[in-house]
Length: 458
Image 1 (cartoon, rainbow, N blue to C red):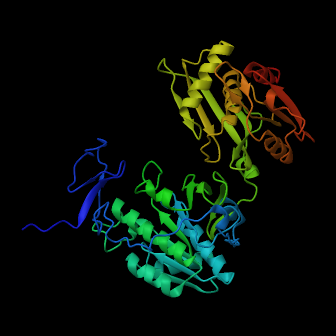
Image 2 (image 1 turned 180 degrees about the vertical axis):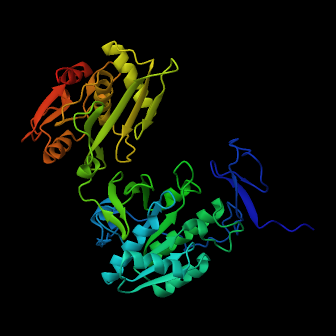
Image 3 (image 1 turned 90 degrees about the vertical axis):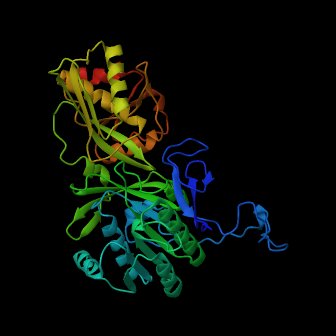
């Protein structure tokens, strides 16, 4: 008699269960979506374990008591702002990024500060030995307080230590190296990552421990494993930027306890990551003077206004048909803006190679960058520089109109704070509450009106 299998296969897209693996889901026909999981102890739909009187009782909204838990600082004002004001007890935070970009370094610095602030900390590493951790810690600085290190990959033993030690903060580095013995699959697989994260989540909520988990990323930049991983945690942080460059950008993609989309800028040094409190000035450092194809814009990253430089280069193509390259901006958006310029300014770009670059390593999706890209492209084409103390923002439509953007007041105030004297913005955003002290506001309704500012700058 054949022994019954202890695992089942289910579709990660629609949840369909099957007794054996197949190359596609028999229900939704999605290829390569069947993954292995432990077989449930009781069949689905069975109520044999449910006893009368043991069911939880639903409560009314006014009967729920809320305890205002105070956040505590991580030691980095930039990281605290991305987290929504600090670290909340019992929260589960996922940190992802390219290899070598600084994930473990940042978390080790956070643990160092928390331990010095009389918090009990446990750092669990599944990738480095204790000697390697010691060498990295010596590079960061002197560690004081109650901080302990553990090298282990068996999650059951790690959770048992968490229940025994009961630290205030714990770090799991990384989730792909952890394994749960009851999940019959290799470490790093979809089943193991999902099962381990679920066990860590229950421990964090049950004991009130703030836990950071480090996640590896795929070639596309997303955390390896099921997308369900990001849904389970409270906060998702991603490191951006070139790991070979000095700057690092930490972006809050998801945050249940604060605003999402916030960013923090760090600089990698020999002693670790140093936060940049004024990223706008940092992004504009090294800006060329009186150079064509360069425009300054103000974008919004969460609730923070950020000044960045947009560079464009137009050259005649050697192959008859121009190509388009975009770094930091949406490629399709660049192609759209070139088509708008051709249509409404009677300029032919089909035989030109167009290159657009957003300096600082940012990937920008703010539509307020459109007008700056238009002015940078036209400036490069005519070889006429944009006025040095001019900043521009606005969304460009297919009819060549300039549309309003959100939080125009915050953008103008940030530009004035950094010494810009002229701001070109959508005419519909010119309201009485704009703070125009020390800066001249020019409202435009079409791209032709904005382009005239370059044409007159000879």
